[in-house]
Image (cartoon, rainbow, N blue to C red; front, side, top):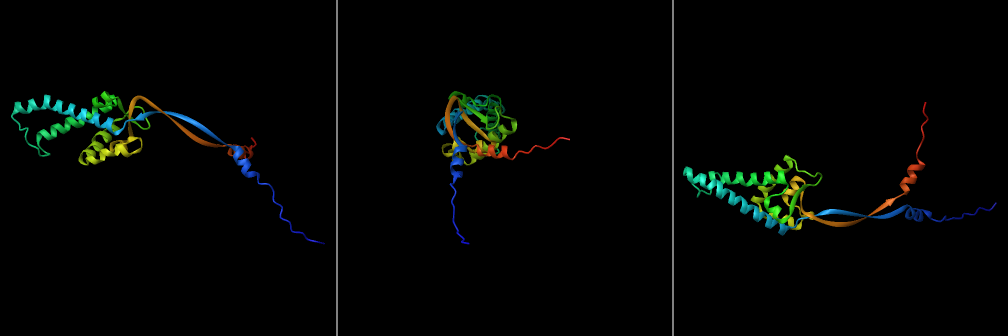
Length: 196
C-alpha cells in the first residue's frame, strides 16, 4: 500500500467572515464647545475687578470707620483676610447658584460637571477654594487651560468640571467598528435549561 502525505489547504474563510461580520458605523456627537484660554483669562480679569470693587465699596469704608489699617500687606493682616473671604465667597457662591461668575456671564461661559448638569457643594468647594488657592500660589498653572484637552485648568481637573461656551456646539464624528460575529457566537452558544 502506498502512503501519500498530502497537505490540503482549505480556503481561509475566516478573514472574509470577519470582515463580513464587522461594520463601521459613523456616530455624530454634538457637544458644547469648551472655553479657551483667552476667554477664560478675560472673564477672570473681569471677576477680579468686580471683587476689588466690592471690597473697595464695602470693606474699605468699614476699615476707615473703625480706624483699622489698610496698608498692611502681611498675609494675616485683617484687610488681607477679609479680602480673601470676599474673593473666595464670590467665586463659590456665583459658581454654585448660577454655574458662572459675572465675568463668565459677560463672555457667555458656564461651569459644568462632567457627569451631571448641576454642581453640588463639594464640587464647587473643591474647584473654587482648593483649586483656585493652588492656582493663585502657582500662577503658571493657569496656563494648563491653553494646553490641556478640553481646556481643563487645575481646578477643573480637581473637581471634574469643564468650562463651556453657552449655546455654542460642535459636531464630532466618531467611527466605531461593530462586530456582529459576537452576536452569532452568542446565539450559537445559548442553552435552554429545562424548567421543572
